[in-house]
Image 1 (cartoon, helix red, strand yellow):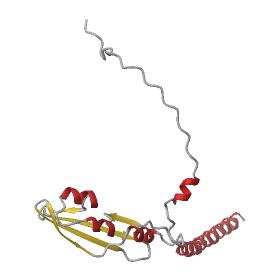
Image 2 (tube, rainbow, N blue to C red):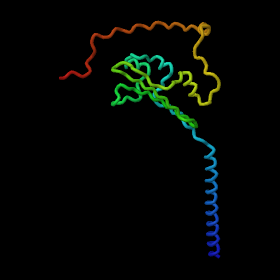
Image 3 (cartoon, one colour):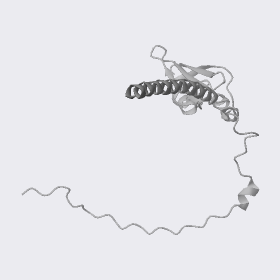
Length: 180
């Protein structure tokens, strides 16, 4: 009798473990199907120096290196072998779209701007509109107040004049104790 219970217990354990393994396999397939439906969010990657059409319009031959740096910012590539050439490279990668690459090369003769090699650059408004990944619809709103809107704003109350600070002492106490 005891032997019969032992054999039946082994059989039940074998059937239960087989059922568990089969369930894991079907669960694994179900979880793979669920994971296939869910797509992870991928962040838009913006790298380099964005140079707009307005910035390139400000560049004129004869400008100094400091003036070019003030307008365009620090160049991304400054080669030791091409000291008179600065490169501004900009890439923009977005999920599901081909990456954008824009490049502007500034050449100098001595300390003065000689020529600019570039492809057509977008305006700042076009670039800001391209950053929208479809979450917003419609036109970009104007971010300036009209004269009429400025007149409708409340006039800020004048703040009370702060009290003058007391005069500084003529001498300060020593930071370290005197030697004995």
